[in-house]
Image (cartoon, rainbow, N blue to C red; front, top):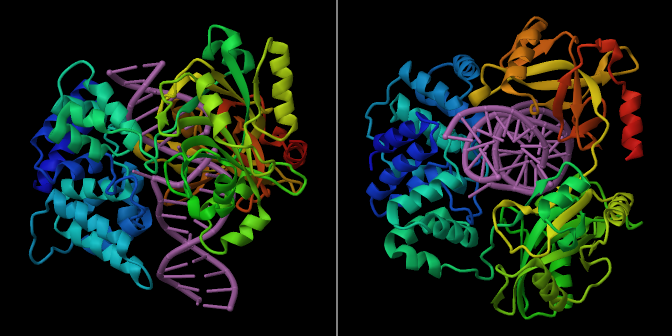
Length: 558
DNA sequence: ATTGTCTGCCCC
DNA sequence: ATTCTGC
DNA sequence: GCAGAATGGGCAGACAAT
């Protein structure tokens, strides 16, 4: 397949918002793809060049790609930056740069999908001194053989942002439409995706073996399964109403602030997977040891949350616990410093028996049979069924007092539904008092927001009469609110540098957040976790904004 | 040897 | 993670 | 109600620059 043909497909997908049109376009392309092109097409349409289970990174993102565009075209970095900032897409800037190239490659070979895909894959193998330059050269090499449209999607692929409006859902529908018949085709594709987490494999299987082949793909130990996710509840009562008609079939559990993990066990072999189904077994030898010692089942697949604790038995802030996740060297040192507890709350298979179609109540009794709790190492998630809302409310309070995030609410009769945020699991967390903060700086956005100052830096009053930054804001406003904000901010611009804009402190925003954390990044020494826009405080001047002392007080209080 | 910048189907 | 938008 | 996009803080690792 010529790369130009793949690009024609991307463009057609890009040209419509209608789901059905996207599915039809993609299905036709998948059906027409050659034997060895189906995988690359399924991957690149989602901006991915590796299968999800491959532990490899391209190691190229916006900065190095901008350099590659400069190398390939001779267009200056400043010009590329400027077009990037205007269009909000580095791929668009690449298209422009190729069109305005001041240097032509001596001989230009037409690109193929295969070459683009395989060359990008090679980037991951480069390591050591000079590797960044070699990555830049490799991307530049592709770009110098690309026409403007090819360059646009080549760059978007390298960055992993195709912006085609095609996600896993659309791709699954297209696979079904391309290779299968019948009403339940899409459901069969979805199920196969849930248990393999690999759309390329699913597409190949659907094409080569049809429906029967897909149905043969089952849950296997050491092939992680997509996790069932929770929806957000407005409050405890709302959550209970949402999960089940009958409050008697609701289980409330502590919601822990750690990392969601799936643990696979077969005798001595233990693997620990994250929510994105990455392996983190190496980072948690303590967890592996605890599982070996206390899991009594020979074979099982368990679901839970890993949480860090301090000497006093209090859960540590997520930012501290998170150090353990990416640690590669001196792991034992961190094992000592930040011990963790594995809180288990579900069982997906037990002694070879799949439990996906069983109600939660049944899965929980299998979980109970599968291991012996050991305090401080491996425990059941704290949870119960409650007779009335008042007792559930006090349970919720006890979760907060113990330093946890809130509660999960689960329907005891529901089956395990991988990959979906279904209404059978809800999470309830308390809302913090909002802060009134001043916009100190702003940045031009990308993609669909490229005409807006969509990233707003927030400051609180500091004792010197200035403003100390406590983070950035970029969600919570509608397009309309953002357009109005952008308009107003442009009246206060004092300096502009690339995408960054300095503004007079003039606009006060009401901002919601989950938590205040200690920050090494921001001037105030604090940062908001999950900040979002609530409203413009028209009634407040910058001098009325919240001060650093209030931020400090709230930090100490939580 | 130290510091700065970039990256991540990162974790949340 | 949260949130908004188009279907 | 779903799927998709655009974005938050902060961490360790990997190189590059000094």
